[in-house]
Length: 219
Ligand SMILES: [Zn+2]
Image 1 (cartoon, protein in one colour):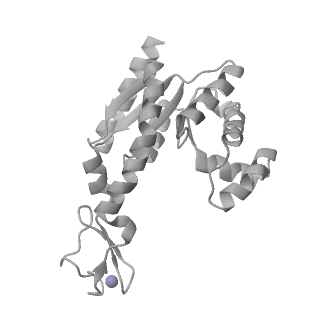
Image 2 (spheres, rainbow, N blue to C red):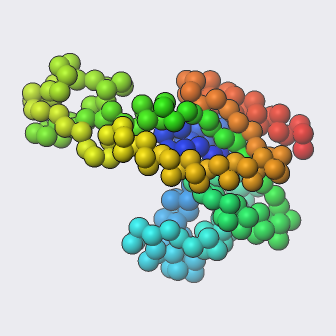
Image 3 (cartoon, rainbow, N blue to C red):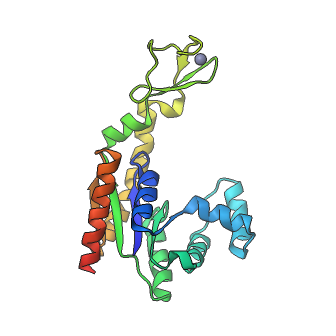
């Protein structure tokens, strides 16, 4: 079973990809690991991708897809894989589909973990750092005992620019704009399954597994 897991930042994609891969005994492939592994082994594609990774630039699609095809041809991926972090846009999705088709393969399902923007802002913002000792707090998951002060050293807490709700919201808008056409792409191919990502980690996992078994029946 060849799966793609989609979700906006903060939706829990990485966590869920690991959980469903374990439960379904398929391989969890992240684009980051794919790059690191190819660079470590100094494969031809890895050597080409290296300067992009080192400069923090986007690795060209043909390199990423090439590494992916190589990865899924390995014995442990025979039963299937769940892809996490790729494709990021419709061009990449098309490149992936074309490359798979050339190998007589196809993506079976794209699973989308749906979380509202408000909830994502809540999850991604609200982090506070201690200016004195560097301790990290979170308004919801790890609040300091006294608001604005560090539990450990009583230092003053400050919020980084990137962790401010308005900044997070603006950044998310860009991600939403990229995600919409991608969802539409898989929806039009009848491959899109959406689950509510605002439930607990276990409930989301169960819903994903349920969607996977439904998807398997259809095919
Ligand atoms: Zn402190």
